[in-house]
Length: 106
Image (tube, rainbow, N blue to C red; front, side):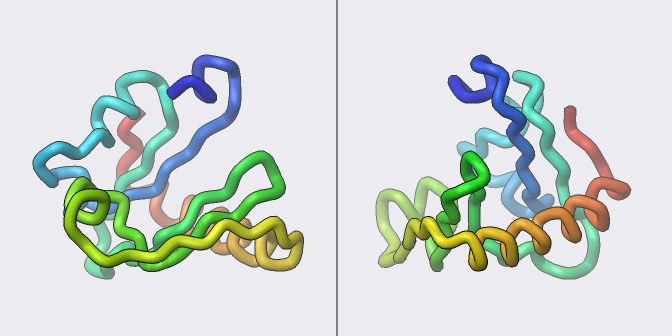
């Protein structure tokens, strides 16, 4: 949320299953003004990645849930690789275009 308060453009894509989880921060993030779209399509949003500052890609099996943080065996990798970043950026933009027509929480 600090990055948002400092003027960084933050966008989040989630799915309706994760928004409804006990302890989910999605509603709080959306209410703070962060752009959040929720996928309510019949397919499951199973991507787990984040893009930072046009440089860094974070990806892996890590589910961004309290259970993952407290109980699961998970992995995450941070890459500073332009080619990988651009590939994930294209996928994010594709999903943003598909999902945002479903519901926007902010």
